[in-house]
Image (cartoon, rainbow, N blue to C red):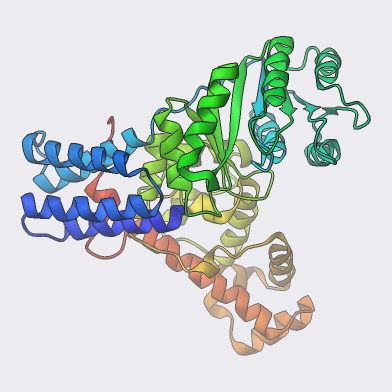
Length: 439
């Protein structure tokens, strides 16, 4: 969903940027393109029409700030109105707290609970989890397995069906732990006994936060779910899951924003690291190809030791095979490569799919191949002739094709970095919007 919506939005703004005159007709065309992109992403028609009217009115009536062209002024308005559409972000504290997780069955609540534990763990906090889901078979085993992978204690008893009792005992067992996350049971509908149980658990735990997990596939229907839970336990944040697998993600995001429930995280993958802090400004910035450098810096600080990667040298074009391996190894700890690259300001540059295809197994194979290279070859890949490729393959127990695949990947990454450094084509979103800070 994000890829398609981002491409459509960038295309609409690219068309505007290519016009010699930005008049009423140009604004009307831009608005129609934006409407089409947002409605295809399942955003509510009323919200789309309100956004369209705001963009039209402001573009035609507001005077551009001093030193800003009409074109840049209109782009700035589009940016601001898209950010406004996404609503506010919920509060996330890094101190002692109890978080109550709510949601219907199938929303991804249990997996998200473990992802959330990992998020706070990466921030340096001591975390523990309580399994209060006594309804779904295997709920405790699933949560315990996920938490074990990240060495987070998980309290529960699959033989005990009293969720209220388990939560009381879990809170006692984890007394003194900085962050305690309570997973609760979900059902296929908002049944009265489910609502009453979560009201009771909220009272027992005296939860600091009550966060609702919603499947992005619900689209616009997410607003009803958010309202019902909010009436019961005063929801103060929403996590939207499975954003990578549905065309309705835009509908879910805008529907939740409409309820005034702040969106706090977005889940868009299967691994324990695939949970992103939601920031409307950064979210829209990434959709438009402007990146989210603040999120990138935060992720890097958590994962990479000082001096491990020379980003300045990389952006200047100094990029060898030795650099590539060090960088991929570090980036692998930061999360999925596609997610990390989306945080870079890349304008309308589209990377080929193979640039993201980097699994841990492939990295291990590449390391063995590079271990068979000489220092000179690692620092100067142009030395790698056919005879050298053959020698390296024999030494690494690989085929020459696998060595050539590594070299192809290296060249793809080098081209991508050159594109990031200089931008490509006449339209560079980063340059066009460089003065849009502080919106």
